[in-house]
Image (cartoon, rainbow, N blue to C red; front, side, top):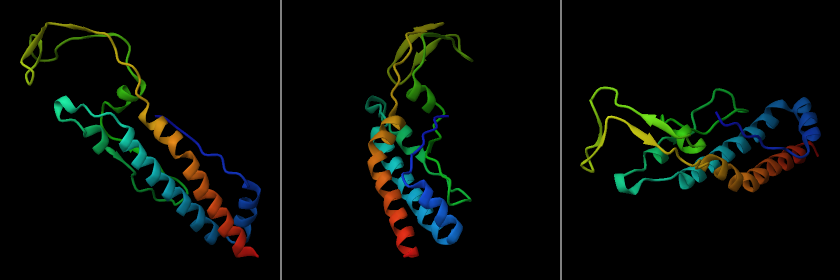
Length: 154
């Protein structure tokens, strides 16, 4: 699991606001979190690689934002089982067949033999790139939420 965090400037003001008007504060911060999740999710879909030679796009399609029961939490995830291997890369490894006697790619009509020495793959950190590219937008969402919270007290 890849965890990333956003630093919120003016956290002391947020703590005071939570004490004075918790519902309004949670509403504003929850909105900023939701907007941030949508931004990261959209960017991650643009950053995720697509294997056009095989009619790919599954990795992009599997990126989602599961509904959270609390407004102050959220996540963007990919449910494709191979996502972590694309994101983090793999070391060189041997691939052996599970059922058949040899390895083949039926679509390409290629037979590789009883085992393959896979050279590994380089990391393609599409989620990290998405987060990095979304960071300034996310900061503006939280800054606007804090402005709205502070305005409600003046």
